[in-house]
Image (tube, rainbow, N blue to C red):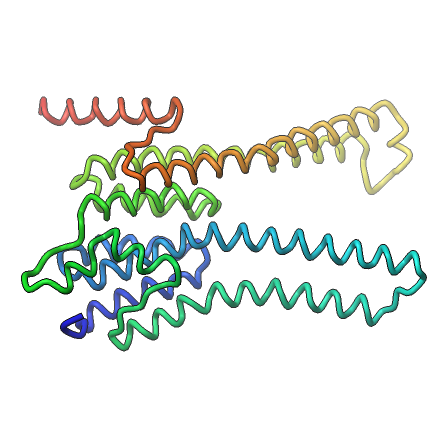
Length: 312
């Protein structure tokens, strides 16, 4: 970079990176920062888009890695304790050490996730051109950031790639329950009038994520309904003998039925997340991705709205 960023550029960059500490809720700030600073500062725009990528795509990678490690650690501890139990060699100290390692890895991963945004914030506060590992340099080339900063004449980031990155991160954020919706919502409100592509992608992403969230909440409601019926039918907590009555049997049927339905729904949720990741990948590859059925409905709605606006 030829010149040090201004105070305003640094502030937006620092805030965008530090918002990762909010875990999900902070994803709004990078979108606002990019919208505010685009065509004002390539430095701040790039840092905000990079922070957005870390909180959506990076969060997805981090969460999947987190889950895999938990599964592997639980499996190792279970198998180890099983072998020790067979040999009658299980002691409290061994169990304590295993539990300590488990929690060390879990909290260590969480600390690592927070570490990079904090380093990024400090670097940007000092006016440095921070790049996240793996993602930073690739994003800089994708947006044309390095070329825009090295030329003699002032050039901006590649607009089409900016919009595609923001749209794709909206798709990726489907894995962030509830809070993932605020990224496409902010992009739609702040930049929808400028970019029809970003408007459509953000709208369909918002509707899709809202649907996934409703399905997730619905699973919880179904389970709670079955549990409530079970309590009403059996008077659970007052008279356990009611479990042997016809009302108790009906209550148990409702309870286990609701549990089964909720479990089936929860097991299908990862498929919705995978579809959201696939949509983000397709958008980055240059496609105008449409979700099955939903995409055509949203596109028709936008087309009708634009037609009505022209008639006015």
